[in-house]
Length: 353
Ligand code: 1CP
Image (cartoon, rainbow, N blue to C red):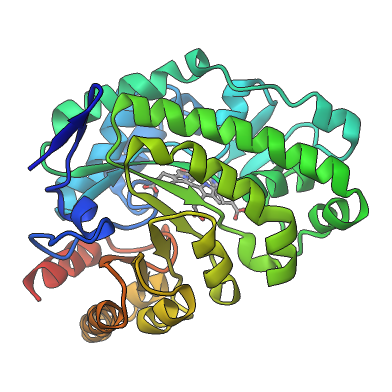
């Protein structure tokens, strides 16, 4: 069932790859954004003794943490345990991932001069990630491995704001007030993202996801002008691997069409737009991924059961409306307080339907 290009083996028989490419998956694939991490006691036990970035640059720890949700939940894909700021750190940008906050940048990037000092990413500096992928592919068997990166806009927002943001005022100020510096920043971040994805693809991941988590803060006009060309370049540069490319952001109902046009094979949809409506906005010929509201996992078994069935039915309607596949996921990441046993039952239910 699998064909080989160069040294890579395309595992088109995996349910996730089949659903992403218009094949016939043996079952409806399901995985969860942020499935590795704080909802799992076994993750918290490891992190009690290891820092976040330390863990991300240790091949054995990356492998172990990536495997934890696979062992527990019977999901159809593992997502590499890492973070969108890992390639920035590896390139030499001074930052940390602070517990309870997220990425914090030591010297926020707010001038043309600061942008001109953003380095390139040397593949050797993320050698631990390549080694982790090798370990994972040996252990995963018939579970897909998803590599990922942050899209240039979402990375830029952290670099400019200095950390998580509510309104992205400095980011939008640079975008509109100094479009040349903005374009240079986006070009440099796209270069870093391309190298980081190429490293993962060379190591053999089965799919990649480009997270533009915060693109939904933008108008469609701003997205088209200031963001789309750079995301399109990233996705084009990795197209030659023949591996499905998933593209996702939060609150992107108004951006689904332009996000679909930057070149992904699969469009991730948050919980605000039903999957069949998403297909009408995206157009036919792509797969959709999503979109159970992660807060529904707190609402008790009856609600979880009926919401999972509704998303599966929406997925079937999406297929009837022209989508080439449906990958079940949440509309955003697993919240830290989620009961992991609820996730296990969600996977069982989806596979039984
Ligand atoms: O299973 C997995 O998905 C875990 C691997 C993973 C991924 C895919 C982590 C580990 N981070 C990410 C991607 C990521 N990181 C995104 C895109 C996905 C999304 O939208 O959720 C973003 C925006 C980040 C940035 C980030 N890193 C945040 C969000 C901050 C904000 O702006 O609100 C946070 C809290 C982090 C830290 C982080 N990354 C990952 C984990 C497990 C954690 C928590 C750190 C800890 O355990 O203390």
